[in-house]
Amino acid sequence: MSEKLPEIRVRTKISQDELEKKVGKIITDKDVTFVATNKCRVLKPNGDLLFVYIPKAIPKDLLELSYPVLHSIQDVTDNRGLASGSPRAKRIGSRQARAKGVKSSIIGNIDKMGGRFPYCRTTAWTGKHADEFESIFPLFEHLASVFEKYVPDRYNIQKRRAIATEKEWIIGNTPYSTITVNNTYPTGVHKDVGDLHEGFSNLMCMRRGDYSGGILTFPEFRVGANLQDGDLLLMDAHEWHGNTQMTLHSEDAERISLVLYYRTNMIACGTPEEEIENAKKTVSPSFQPEDPKPSDFVTTEFNGRHDPRGGIKIDLK
Image (cartoon, rainbow, N blue to C red; front, top):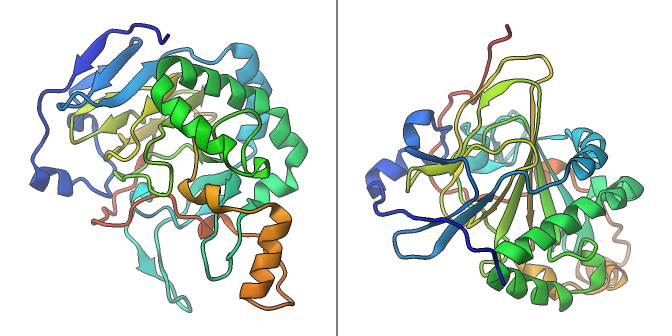
């Protein structure tokens, strides 16, 4: 049985016109009127669950175990779409428009994307750092246990889907196939795509140094949570969300956020060997797997406009 938590029900939403002006932008403190500081459940106006906020959900020993590995993941991608909080622009020699580079990486596993990647695969970082990845499975499995405790209905749906998936594509004993690792950048207002709609995203935070802002906000409802070190947010990532502008006050300021989820189409993946053989049949008999770059991954919705404002300010004391 899940723990009984205080419940807050959002009664109003901002207008569609007002919301559209925020899509793709880095928002400010003026866009949020309620920030959760204690353990609670926040409901949408229709009574559906928006998020569960659980402060200090992760024991210190797991944070200390995992930090060196997660801190090392700092690949830069220019394909986060709205989540980058910047406009897309075509570069010389490129047919595809790209946004500004941000430190955002995908670890774990990914499903077919067509084109260069007509097969399910382990991401490049994961394949090259398999031992480091497995060393932090205890963190992921702990997060899964918290997910099961506080949102058991969504957990059970996602876990059943994971069990029905080839085991190579699931991260340890969890309901997750994939993890997005963001390092010290506020996301523009966006919706996640590609993850299981009936499941629930898990967002955890690690903090170092001194910074302000970065409040995870659902601007349509004007509510959010200012995640501290070791906090967890179980959330409906299919609602518009983003972070408020960040100001860094120390040289070592760092905010690592992990978003853990199950990608909807992983259920259709064969074994790793079968995926390569299918790709050879689809592309050519000489097909060889290619390591994807971070910029090959798309995990956010692309509709809407972008704002050229930067999301980070430096104010070193």
